[in-house]
Image (cartoon, rainbow over all chains, first blue to last red; front, side, top):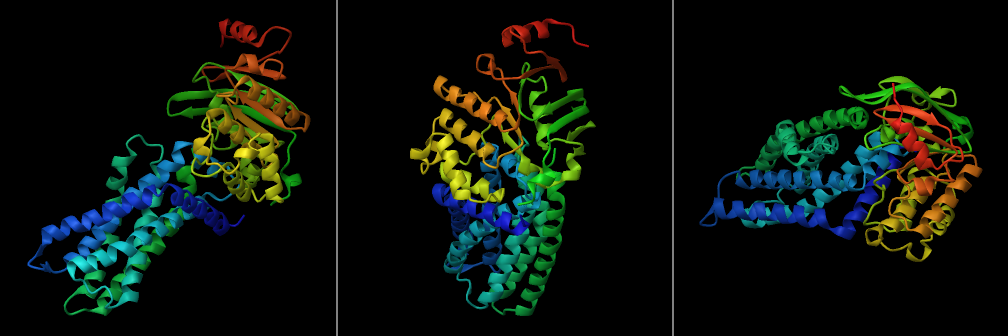
Length: 226
Length: 241
């Protein structure tokens, strides 16, 4: 079976499971919106937010809520050892990685579809100034974050302190993603927008995605073997 | 789906296979051969190496030294396609609680690229006696129902090598009887069945061979007229090298 077909089967299964339990969608969405609200109360004075605050808070909400989703997505596979069943199937282990990544991306992008307008509303951020560029930054940043996170979450699935270790390992590696996302988004939201700068940060995100997703595909088999 | 004829095998060999976890020895220089059309019982106390042996045979673990041969070829030569011929029922049941029985079987059937999948799934549901509850979520099943479904999930792709870890767990007498009958049919069809269990009562009359394990060492014990439990106790009471 091709890697892509197996990955799509796994992603579709994850989405069916999530549509029944809605556990990840509700918790990540609740966390992301709560995060934005708390920062809105802290950083908005007399109807005006600090410069670049909207971009930073948007990416903090995405990163923190994404971490919740990453840990939980693999915890589900661990409970009845279904991850082992996937690895016993006659498919490339990288298909498991791609399938889990695809399911997480759909979930995180769904959360972003709600969080971005909330940030726009509360922080008066011009989210429609360059919608395609903003969407591309969010998509590329989400792929980079979830791409690294999926690999680490899979690595830690048998570790006792996986909930603690996941952010400890994940955030240092994904700092470039978060910085590029924040700076690119800030360049769009700025009073004097600079779309060329935003485009440069997008290029960096795409480069990061290409390198780290390729590395993850390479390393997933040894990571998941005994 | 790749040609099963090219991947098929009549026997599986452990050749001086050892498996260590750090300094701990889970299985030590074990040589055994399992042939088609037989049910082999693996018996031993907790931590004796039963699950490690099943892991080596399922290819999820690699031997630290020695080898595992399928026919005359090591697993590494056969690649991922070898798994078309191996079915595993673990102590954890490898089922998604938020999917129905039918969805679980369909999902794994698709991963194994099984032809006539709907018909196969229906036969599997029938074997598990779950036709009426086929569209209920598995999370609502009792342990016994899940165990029956998990067995059919493991057998959905007609594996040559069937590895069962405590298959009688959670089954009532009626279901245990059905499982024993199912395993006999598997044996008759030419499958190689290995079953790790502590359930001597259900294994009696079912296993053709008995392998006892202790501290990572394996010893084959003849199945004769004596009760399995007595044979096991006598073997465990002996001096092991």
